[in-house]
Image (cartoon, rainbow, N blue to C red; front, side, top):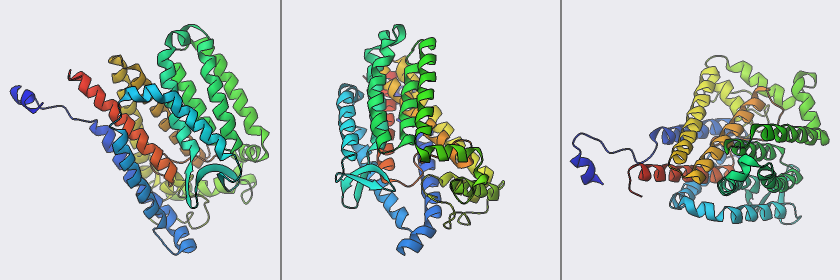
Length: 384
């Protein structure tokens, strides 16, 4: 390889990876570790007498995730396409096991974890990854049927329906929204007829609305979102505390580590409401930096997908599109919830919020995207 480029004189060899993508991932991770530590230091010191407890745990999960990612990046995309159905079946089985008393771990009223003792894994995070891999393979195998027949769309919706029912039984409405919208977006990008897509989309929106108001706690969240100040010490508590954090931030923030809301006022400050702490400590400027980094990340992911599609590697292209949609949807919803633009639901900031399962799955996602980009570059150079 080196001799070839040396023979071309002043022509520099192309970068072995997408530098903007890698830079965005690293910056998001570093800012996430910094802000997650700031948001959790008070609660971990008070509850565990260890100020950096959550930071140490996050670093351990990140190290494990990097190790897993180093192995995943060696896996050819053809293998993902071949075994996508088996991966989805395993995840559905795990989602079912979570609901069995004695096997699934229940935390705060939700049964979302599998594990032994203190070690647990949130299966809904893996569900997001598996549905993207499965949908990408289906779009490749049934592309003609999807573009010409409504049945091409209905079939995968049956699989998605099973996953949604299992997720709602946990319950995990946030993950249900993410996997549903991501799947619909992939189907649209796969070339489904607009009239069929519009009909199904409105149907899904209606169904999600019915589900949202069917449970008392979901209905309370929805009504509170409309006017959180009506019950600021009851159902509106989380949102009002988050809005106070936004108000204190101003243009440049109160300063790193100087958040008041993280001092037991804002629940889940290091997980679901991390963006509120960012707003309070770093202000509008800090928020715009984070939004800009995620925008850059999603743009580079979609560019990977477009390049793979140009090379007729449609499975890799759809996987990249699916991951891009997943990150964008979860990021937008998280910001919307924190700022009061969307009803409160449990969704974290990808690559930033505390959570071992999320970190591990996100590392796998990044590794798969790096593999897609690597294969794109090899083909563009005529090596494979």
